[in-house]
Length: 317
Length: 317
Image 1: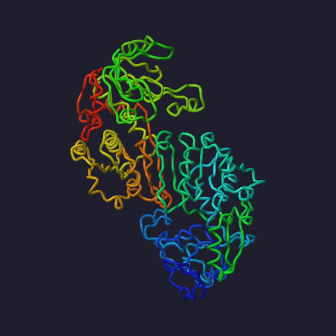
Image 2: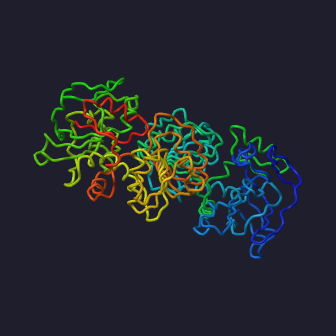
Image 3: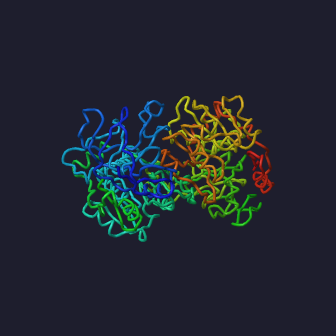
């Protein structure tokens, strides 16, 4: 089958053997896949991954338990061992022996077919288009914040970064009733949030020291984001750290101590609330789609994702 | 009166005017004061402070409300405005308009007398010697951790740093029932924890990656401590950050995100549990006293505090 394979140096469109059926696994015929910035980081060497890239997908179950045959599904990306302490505690996303689709020791979804543990599958609700459903994974990462910290009505939140994740996070927090200020570099991207009771502000005009936010989400994708986030947080407030970067940024940690700020890392999240929000049309994802490419042009899609101004690129597989 | 005055360049023993009585303030005749590493940092320019140094003290109330006359007291160091939103919420320690004794816009306790808001005073329980009571402030900072995170019986805690604060924190966590491993550079300092059901380990033998601690307290006083703390923390565990340093260390933040670690800054704490622990003899502080100097030799005490191997130096004022 056709797949975007990364050999540790260059992602290339290659003919790969299709995944074999195995116990507890389903084979999904990929319909659409989404390109994520993490794919770019991996293609630059992050995680030392070798294999088929891609971890955002929607497709139809071709093989696996009969009850799943033909189901339109999305899938969680952490393949937990199911036997360790973390798994027993319901923390499969933190299983130390986990494989991660397209990221760690498991082939990804930039391919005609992908193998996914049945336990990781979620049916796409009727009425949710595949173009929306393919956002389930990044939207779940945004919903993870609500699992980690209480977000109350009228809580003052700042979202730093107007990339894909920042735009989803801003919407999720506003949907939860918070007063959201989205800060970014791109007027056109921030404009996508208009009409959603979300304030926006160009980063150059943002006066972090006056923000005194209860909750700041750092989704800039840059190591420099944390210091800005700390400056915008009130004493005893919370910074949610979403960016994973390869660099080791220099950080002034004194504000963390002096203001007793909570810095909380946040990664993958729960699919249920994400799918429910898509079903109820509470989150706009379609305006985040910059373009759709055929799988055969996956290398070009990866390249285009690195271009400023691009939001989500989808692959028809 | 005699006082250790910092003019922004050099701490010098100087003759200073004694503090004037004012509304809501008490004048305390200082008996003993403790030298803290923060005093050193301030003498190196941290906080741009000018004034009398020192914020750990025990003494007798000389002037103020009649009910306090002659009382042996310790005092909280944050002088809150009492009128702002933070103060109304009971967060006077985070009042944006606060002055801080010997640190920010308020004269300190390396002097014969010091002015302290009456609201900040705590009576020293009978039976607690002044040599113990002078530890109330740093011990309160250790107890702050218990206010911030639940510490449960048999929780696996690592304390990084065998300085004064690290040794107090290790004891407070053990006193709360946690399983504590104290990691440091000095065998003689770690030995002070022996007989208290606290494991100790030289930092060179510490295998952070195997620790998988629920809670790690970073009290190394070095910017490099955070990365080691992160490595020692289990997924979804907590790092308490105690060190305030002037440097901006380079930090690999990826583990924070990947393992969804909570990093929590922690500063000043509640005096009540600290005084109660001293009263009940649950925490050993006297073995932390390296030496006692007369106030007239305060500059030498400051210098000696910077010497490796020194723990707490006290000043008789």
